[in-house]
Length: 167
Image 1 (tube, rainbow, N blue to C red):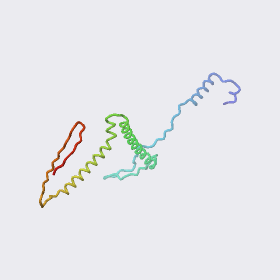
Image 2 (image 1 turned 90 degrees about the vertical axis):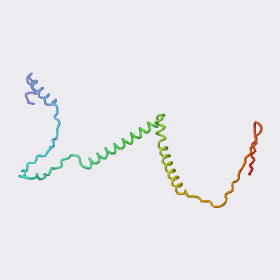
Image 3 (image 1 turned 30 degrees about the vertical axis):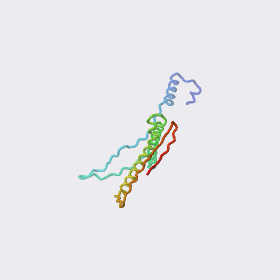
C-alpha cells in the first residue's frame, strides 16, 4: 500500500477497485493441476523405400510398479475366490436352516452319496466273488433221503406247544 493511502481515506473508485482486486485474488476457482502423459508415440524416423518398417523402441512410462500390479491382481483373485466360497457356504447353510424337503435333502445328500458308493463297491465285490467261486460240484457216492415228520399238539386258550419230531 502506498504511504498516502494510510493517511487519507480511499475514494469510492479506489475502494471499488481494491474490492474487485481482493475478490479476484481470493475467490478465483482453483484450477486443478493435471499432469498430462502422452498416450501415443509418433515415430519421426524416415520410412524405408520398400519392405517392413523396423521396430522402434517405446519407453515404458507406467506409473504403477509391476510388483504392485501383481499383488493387486492376486488380491482380486483371492477376494473373488473367497466370495465364491462364502456364497456357497451361505447357500448351504440357508438350505440347512429352513426345515423343508430341500434342507433335509441337502443335509442327507453327503450320506446318501457315501451309501451309494459303498453299495456299488459291495455289489462289485459280491459279483466278483460269486463269479470266481462258481464251480461245478460233482458228488460221488450214495445219497440217503430221510423224511422228518413234525407233530404239534395245542390245547386250551393259553397253550403249551409240544413238537414231536419223528424220523
